[in-house]
Length: 224
Length: 224
DNA sequence: CTCGTACACCGTACGTCGTACGCTGTACTA
DNA sequence: TAGTACAGCGTACGACGTACGGTGTACGAG
Image (cartoon, rainbow over all chains, first blue to last red; front, side, top):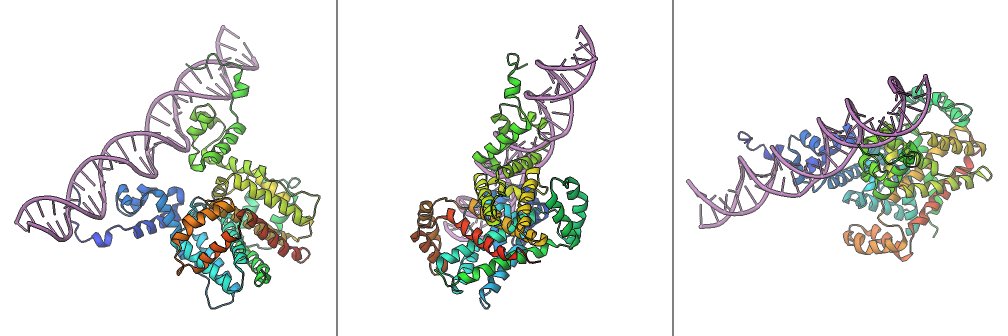
């Protein structure tokens, strides 16, 4: 019934798994993962809902592909520098990317088989550690530790309702402190006051723990 | 129309926010968070779906309450010991609890305002650190670092499709190695082989990173 | 030039979801 | 005895994922 005047638009306007997944990521960035439905996604692509199923077997597969797109965005550890700088680079990049796509974090939990970009990433990180002199088991330990820190930080960051020092100060005054009776929560009150006074910026927190972890790993490079 | 022979069952079989939330946690443990629907939950409680809304304003509020129940299960840092032992205790407990309720991790990301148990927990941890001599800002750093590690580890653990060394060995042989061409992923192959050979048990991984982090924090106890 | 087949895409339909709304029966107070 | 409050329920609505069976266009073979 429809479409009689459209002709060679196909190759340009036509769908593809690429286009579907990329648009899904955009939609999730904009509206959160709960706002991502097959119908809405199809709408954003100017297509019918069922057309998507020619490119993705199910919504689950779509989510898998989205997570892998996110992994593709994370910078691999550069090979030219010392291992600490390289790992810092990739960790900082990972945090940035996960902050840009907060929905990806909650998806990680439920996706059990890593996509190709995830594997490539893991390989590159392991390579960096092994070349720096970490024995196999130590490299595994370091991997777990660093990834735990990065993911856990991103997870906590995603649940913060503020981004900057100013917003923190405003929220502390208006929202937090009122529900924190000073006698029941003396230390949280103390912290909140001190953080606001110091102009605490959560964005700078990441590097502190990261460098501390990297320094703590350094001595393990040559041991068994 | 119904219910004419039931009488004093009310106080025993009657609902309450407690019962609703606890049963929701059980259901989520059993079927995952996707398997938790208001109808199914009501069914498990022998009630109609809409009855739940007398105890929870919305499903969102139910999820908030479930997360707080999980926090209640986490052991607070004991006050009698040195700070490292205390923090180790609570971290180990947190990991256990989160492993028992994997759905809670993905919920953390979307819940922006902490419940009472969460606040009490945070207060206790901060108290422990401050009493151990950490200055306010350092205690904040330590908090972020430790929580990041615990949450991130739990997140990674939840996405593992195996729990024991044996299962890892089996999966490595049957699933992972076949899709990891040795020329493209030399280091992952090396790691997989070494881990299987060493009888690597992911359950022991947690303590390694935890103790490393605790040791790295120790020297910061008295500095500004 | 026709026709068959393959492909890209779509409309409809089903069962499930969260929940707004309004009704019932019971329990207790006046 | 009447009135009120409350616990719980039934129905209904719109949105979801997706099974199924179309329908138009492109293209190679005859």
